[in-house]
Length: 64
Image 1 (cartoon, one colour):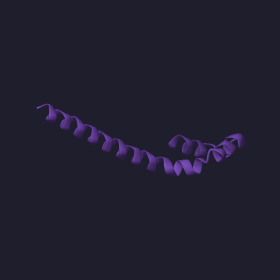
Image 2 (cartoon, helix red, strand yellow):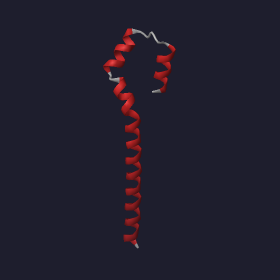
Image 3 (cartoon, one colour):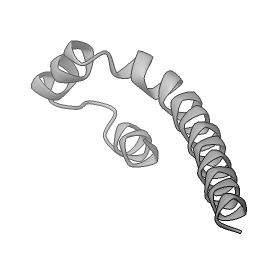
Image 4 (spheres, one colour):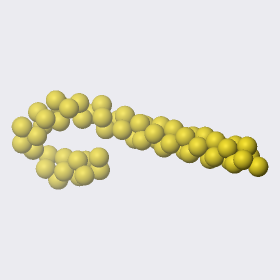
């Protein structure tokens, strides 16, 4: 995301194809939502890790 920002600052008059492509993919929307999605994915993966560790510990208790 930072790379695109730097490119837009360095080249304010970018190629119309590039600008058109950014609009097609909804870059403004993606650039706003991507950090939020990454944060949510990190939280979810941490939660899954905790669940797996808990299940492993629980299964070991049953072996004893």
